[in-house]
Length: 539
Image (cartoon, rainbow, N blue to C red; front, side, top):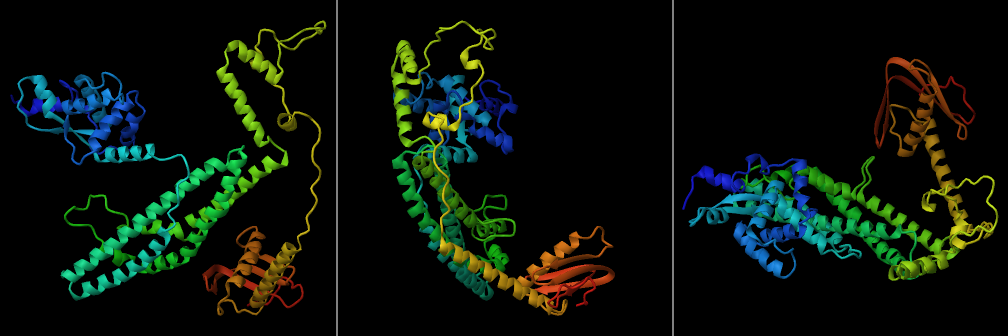
């Protein structure tokens, strides 16, 4: 039995005339893509999960409603899906809904059937969409993830370092082979080796970044808890002091060489991307592997190298480690100083909660009264002339009495503790003094360089430029308008910077970090050991 194409299209769109508008678009936008996750929160999510696992278990799965129903029958016998979910009509409804969400697409196969129902069940085939495969793959991976910490793949750091060096060598070999014979076998093999190295490095970095994010997400989840048991504190102390220190040290040890390799590849990035151009067999509208676009290399560079206003992930890793250690120290202080709930109180509250859970209503009232001392009211004295309490309002909805921290944690209002004494730390004091002396010497040298510098003719050091920019900012802030004169003085080193408006004049300040140009402005520096006046000599 056959049917015209139009009727087959109607059957493939749904049971007996489901409108074509209900079908999922081939290229959904953001809202359409979010619909791919809808089956995870549906009431029949167990059935949807079984169906999606069936479609993603093999390559190029092409199944009919009858085949899906047969597979669900086995799951129903194992109580993995609800009873009745393997019925063919129910399965058709589930498959239609997955099509509307965009997880499945309708296929077509010519079939010979003895009835319309058999034709409908056999000719309408379903296939899984590309994005739905990714969703189901991530769902299965998430369901198998343990609750504990994920080990950081530290061994990938030296592999990435060696891989970037190998990319530089492979790029040089590919360019050399291409210059000899662009279409020869040697050039083709060199490009394949280069592509192999690039793909390997980006896969290794993706795995490293994923393990770092997962580990620090777990760490942030546990160290921010207000109460930690003594064994938990000991375990996290070893985790932070030993494991995190090892991870950070490995990252910092390899970051410099990785950054140097990335800087070298950045100069030849255009040639690298050209050699890794898209394959002609797939066309241009394809999802390519990472490392084939400039944005991929920029993302890899930003992970290891700081940029102005954008710290790298290595810097974020150091900052997150410092916050984690600070949180752990705060937890240890709360547990040992007596300023908060002691760790043993947590166990007592859990034991009390278990007693409440195991008791009946009458016993729970008696347990509540014995544990908290909140017995029923007994009026042994005459009622006051004016009672602010309303007998119609339950106690849980009435006014709240503030309880101080000492009463909540210790059960009394007495003052505890004493003023901490100031610790004498001569080593730290000497270190700070030495750092202050070195900073003062550097600033004195920078001021001396500015005092004898010829602005516009001499290149300034970074320290001298920093001092000049600091005084120049203060001088600019003294002016009310662009036609006013501004002046700023370093009172310690006796250096004055004066900014005067002078149309048509350009003042250029050269340094190792770049060149600063002041348009329509004259810059004056004055300093001779005494406090100079505003009429300094022009440099």
